[in-house]
Structure formats: C-alpha cells, structure tokens
Image 1 (spheres, rainbow, N blue to C red):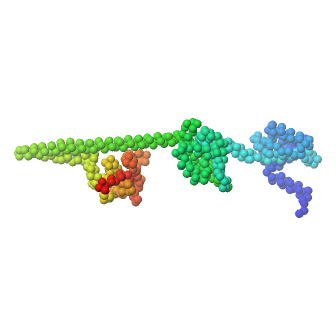
Image 2: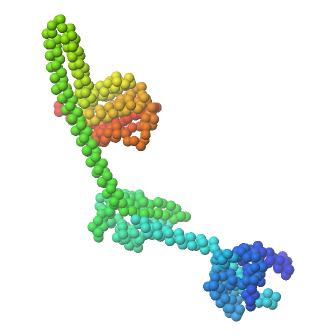
Image 3: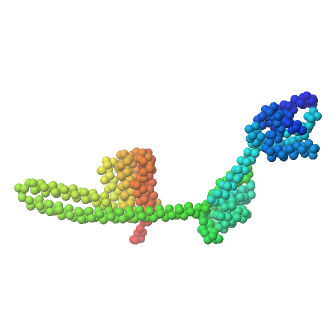
Amino acid sequence: MASLNAAGEGALLYTILQETTTEVLVFDAESLRIVQANPAATHNLQHRLKALQKLTPLDLMTPQDGRAFKTLLALLKNGKRRRTALNVHFLRREGRPYPVEARLLYASDGGRPVFICIANDVSQREATRQALAHSESDLRAIVAHIPGMAFQIRREHDAAPVLRYVSEQSEQLLDLPPGTLCAKPERFFKLIVEEDRAGYLARLAEAGGGHLSFNWEGRIRMKAWADVKWVSVRVSQRRQGGTLIWDGIMLNITHSKQAEAEIRQSREQLGALASHVEKVKEQERLKLAREVHDDLGGNLTAIKIVLAWLKQNLPPDAPRLIQRTEYLNQIVDQTFDAAHRIASNLRPAALDLGIVPALKWQLERFSRNTDISYRFKAPDEPVSLDPDAAIAVFRIVQEALTNVAKHAAATQVKLRLEREAGHLAVTLADDGRGIRAAAGDATRPSFGLLGMRERATALGGELEVRPGRRQGTEVRLRIPLPPPVPDAAK
C-alpha cells in the first residue's frame, strides 16, 4: 500500500483531532497563551475557541494544580523530560472542576516552541471509584452495626469449605477473635451445649462437613461469662463461577427465645385458667340444674297435689273458685315445663346416657326450634368419654349449632362421629352461606369460636373451621379417646 503524502497525513490528523473525545490544547511555550484547541476541549471546558485563545492553561485550573503544572512545564522546557503525565482538575466556564488525566509534550510548530496537552476526562471513572469506596464504607458500617456476626464461607470446586471472612462481632458473641474462628471453625462446635450437639452434627453431615454452612438454631455455653445463649445461624448459598459461596449471619436470639417461652407459659396458664373456669361453670350449672329439678320440682309437685285436693273439695256451686283453681293448675304445669327446660339447658339429662344420645337429643331440639333438618351418624359401639370431655364436646357442638342458626341460613346440618386411631372426630357440616359470607366484620373477635377452640385445646385436641366441600361451613373437632380398659375376665 502506498504511503500517504504530507498533505494526506495532515488531513487525516486533522480529522482525528476533530472527532476524538480526548481534549487537545496547544499553547505557546513562552506566553503560555492557548494557540489551538480541538472540539472535545471546547466542549468540556464550555469555552469557544476564540475565548480559549485569550487564556492560558493556568486559567483553567485550580491554583494548587496550576503550581504543579508550571513545575512540569519548566522540566519539559529545560529538556530534562521529553513528556510527562499528571492528574489535575480543569475548570469549566462556570467554575465547576472535573478531573482529567493529562500528558504534556514539548514540541515545535513551524519553528515556534509550543506545549501540547492531551487530557482525558475521568470524571465518570472517578465518580464510579468514589461510589465503590462509599459502598464499601457503607457496607462495613452496616456490618459493624448488625446485632450479630456476619461471615462468608467459600468452596473452590471440590475442595473443603473455608471460612473466609468473619466480622468483628464474633468476639462479642462467641468470645472468639475473627482470626481464631477463621483458622479453626470447629471451635464453634465446642461451644454448643451437650443437648443440642446431636442436631448440629446431623446438619453438619448433611452439609458435607462445612461448619456454619447451614441454617441452625441452638444454645451455646460461654464458660468465661457463665452464660448460655440462644443463637440462630442463617445462610444463603450462591455460585460465582466455579466457587460455591455461603453468606451468613449469626444472631443472638436469647431474648426472643425467652419471650417465646414466657408467651408459651402464659398461654398454658391462660388455657389452664380457661379450662378451670369452664369446669367450675359446668359444676355450677349441674348444681343449679339439680336444685331446679329437686327443690323447685318438689315444691311444684306439692302445690299440684294441694290444688288437686282443693279442686276435689270445692263446693259444686262455686264455679269461679273451680275456674281459678284450674287456672292455677295450668300455671303449675307451665312452670313444670319451664323448670324442665331450664334444667336441660343447664345440664342435659341425656348426658348421663352418653355422648351419642346427648348429641342426638340436641339435634332433635335444634331441628324442632329452627325447622332445620338434620342427619346424624355415629359408631354402633358406645363412645366412652369422661364427664369433662363429654360436656366439652356437647358444648362445642351446641355453639356450632347456634352459629348455624344465627348466620348460616342453612336448611340442613350433618353431624358425624368417627373413631380415628385413638381419637374421636366430630364433624358438623351445614349447607348454608359458608364461613366467608357469614364472617361479617373480620376485625371483631368471635368469642364463640375462641371458646370452642379453648375447650378443644383443654382436651388435648384441635378444632378446625373451614368452608364445606361444596357449600356451607364445616366444623371438625378431633380429641384423644381414653385408652381401652382391659377386660378383667381375661
């Protein structure tokens, strides 16, 4: 290929200078006045070429950068250097600085000595560097303020996992400096209390022997502080090329575990109190039912006997007295019915016959009062429940039927009793609107449901309220049955 002539080279160089994004300034070696500037320089400095030709490079720099710039110019002019580089800040026309990487050359332009400054705007790179620096600083600040220990585990290909990083909080949490724990991760295992070690070892085997590379909660014993702590290890796994990385954090969860224990204890105490209250209520109901049946029933019987004698001994010519006596006799019969109803509400006599007859009696009464039909299915063999369990099951079904009558707009209910592996399952289903439509205001607590659940919990069982398979609502109670009594004859 033929070489370019001088004119061609000049045209090519001019084109390059016009199109490049690198700033080029040419200025006189004596006066330092700018002679020429390419478009990149005029664009970045925000000056027209004519305006720049009235300035020197020193006018485009901060005083501090200007002094360093002049020193380098002197070295170039004295021939001690042929070219040099420096980092300075140029000033845009409004006075805002931006960083550049500059190279200076000393040359001759038609016999006139000049300096050539070739500069690259590195403001974007500087901003990125500062952002990374700030990000790293922020990350360190975040890690420093985490109420726990941050760590990272790495495994290169098939090599063993290595605890690569541990934050400074390891000393506060484990009384182990970060370097010590990184060098010997197994030292963490020695802190685990004896009762929790089996679970940790099982997880360690699943993880392939990498300490702290799995989620775990347990207790550690700090002999130096005579203290036992609950800690939670949480890790997330990711891949970076051929390297497997676990980013993890270990938190001191002692306070939350203590709070959970207190809440659990309070819950158990509240459950025991609720069970005791219900038991006392049932005892009082039984007492009142007996008093109504025995005392009130006995007095009413005596009154009825006296009225019968009085009616027989009244003179035949006293029709008004006979009429009044008959009216009183009817009032006594109505009071008998009311007393029987009150006693049944307090303590159904059918419960003395067993839970199955009691529930059947309850369904018959419910259907009679609401015109809602029922279907009842129970095991053929007797269902043995202790008195407390029987009354609890009866009250749960009673509350469920009350909810059906109030909210469901149902036409039929189905009650089913089944034996399930040492448990009794009681399922009540209706064909009404369903639990969603009947729920009403979700912000109001349903004390009826709460009471049902408390009764179920007190029996060691569970209660579930859910939408029916096709429509309506299904209430399912499951309680343990007492163990069978061995046959003495055997």
